[in-house]
Length: 135
Image (cartoon, rainbow, N blue to C red; front, side):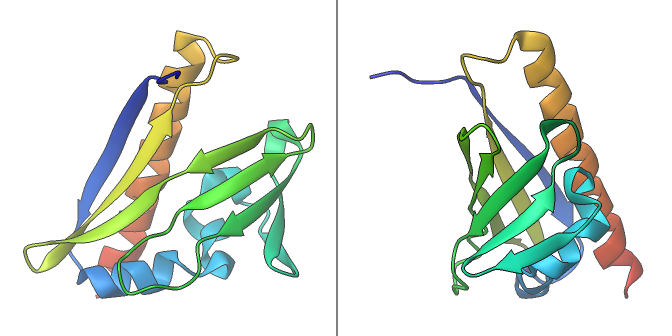
C-alpha cells in the first residue's frame, strides 16, 4: 500500500455553504475561477472536456449533485493519467470553508508539488473573491 504526500488547501468564504456549493458545482462557472480551465468546458455526455493548458486536453468527470458539499472530480489527461481531486464545501459558522486535497504523485518533484499547491490556493482565492463580491 502506497500513501502519497497530501496537503489540504482551504479558504473561508463569507457566503452560506449551500451557495458556495451551488456556484462551484456548476462546470460552466469553472472558467471564472479555476485558472487551469480558463478556456471553459464543453459537455461530452457525462463528462466535460477542457483545455488544460500545458497538459493539453483534459476530460473531467464530476461527482453528481449531492446535499453534502462534495465536489470531487477526476481529471483524465490526454496520456491517460487519471488524477482524483477531492474537493469539499462545508459550513464554517454562517459561511463556508472550501477544501481541496492535493496529492503528490511519483511523477512530480517537490517543486512541482509546491507550484500546484500555490495554483490551487490562487484558484480558491478567485472563487472567494467572485462569491464575496456578489453580495
